[in-house]
Image 1 (cartoon, rainbow over the protein chains, first blue to last red):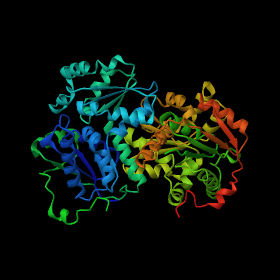
Image 2: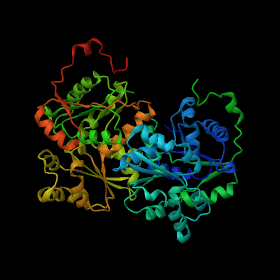
Image 3: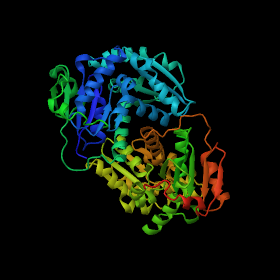
Image 4: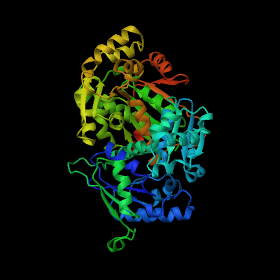
Amino acid sequence: MKKPIGVIDSGVGGLTVVSEIIRQLPKEEIIYIGDTARCPYGPRTEDEVRAYTWEMIDYLTSHDIKLLVIACNTATAVILEEAKERLSIPVLGVIHPGATAALKVTTNHHVGVIGTEGTISSGAYHRELTTINDKVKVVSLACPTLVPLVETGEFTGHMAREIITKALAPILQYDIDSLILGCTHYPLLAPLIEEVVGSNVKVICSGDETALEVSSLLYHKELLYTGDITPHHIFYTTGLKANFKKVAEEWLKPHSLDIRETDLRLPIRFYQKKTAGFRS
Amino acid sequence: MKKPIGVIDSGVGGLTVVSEIIRQLPKEEIIYIGDTARCPYGPRTEDEVRAYTWEMIDYLTSHDIKLLVIACNTATAVILEEAKERLSIPVLGVIHPGATAALKVTTNHHVGVIGTEGTISSGAYHRELTTINDKVKVVSLACPTLVPLVETGEFTGHMAREIITKALAPILQYDIDSLILGCTHYPLLAPLIEEVVGSNVKVICSGDETALEVSSLLYHKELLYTGDITPHHIFYTTGLKANFKKVAEEWLKPHSLDIRETDLRLPIRFYQKKTAGFRS
């Protein structure tokens, strides 16, 4: 079906998910919105996260998307269930794909999870993992020092390695054999994280797994696009286009990007047919 | 939802898929049927495969299953689309999960597929892979010497290694970076296959990937069982219980198994409510 996949995020982190969707599903078109103006969501109240996320969802459903990905762990933890209930299109978060991937690779049933303070304190990964397998031991750790590394472009190098080593030390005292990167910023640090945790710990990038679940859902809902039209991805930012462009072009290369600014105000026509995308 | 997952196969091969479902989804209950009396399906006509597979599907849907897995590549290639159309429950084959997993791991876009003659000549993997990504080069190879190795219990050792090396030689002339084991028997040979293809080729077991897709579908359809009742799996065979038991206990250890023989004739009550499991 020739309709775009909608991806929302609190900022640029969700671009790691987009990058994997483009790689695994190259015929699919993406429409992305990053709420860079109000990023990060991690320290915000649940009500704020809910309100901001619904603004993004309303904005994207007005663009007639066929599936919605909530690519932000914090927003997923707060809003996924109500979004699934209210929208008539399939909705995915990043937590379930990461959790099931860990259950697939773990053999000793000791799974580590790192994320922002908001995601870890929500207990969402723990809940998802133990709902499916109550014998799994989950060790969770908030790593507030990692997102700034990515945002400042420090993906590699001595300093980044040192900060990661220090941040991960508490979790490595446990005998985990798999580690979920429970924040969409972290995949950019994956090579360093893999080095620090060693080859006995399988590192799971939620972006890769979410793209796989998108593929599976589109297939089972018969929504895959199988034609030959080259997709034209559009990226909206609530912040400055120039800042977004810098990060996006670095992460998504070699894609030439159509980036636009938005204040999230909906076009009038949307209000005229406001049930679009919603269950009647 | 406390209903079993139905798994059908031409014989014992599908037990590799069951083994992964039990491992990844330990709360879920399985009801399996292996048509060992008429195995293998590979050399049979399409009409035979269709008729036999529908007999198994009718048998399992009479047991009120919540999801059906066609764990046989040959049967998937022949019947998946019509089963999805006719049944009201979700239906999965093993080809799509294997194909999407390959698209996830490949970086040079050269994907190898090995399977029975029936599966390879159906072109099902090639079709699935290139529908999603038409830039992927697919190298397919029928390996008729591998199933006998598994059926005779020769998973390891010098002879098995030699047979695998010889069987895979043609495909290793191509620069593949991923290899789909497109037959549910092959995962038992995975350690030897990985040795033969080398560490640069990622080996994809369809069973592992199918279990992950089962997990994703159950989750999105809100069919996961989240209670505390220990599952009681039932295994039906159209052949001799003793033969089935020998293989099943070796592959599925440490599970104690409830194995039963069946001639696939349906209980009378099923005919009285024969629309069960079907779209009205």
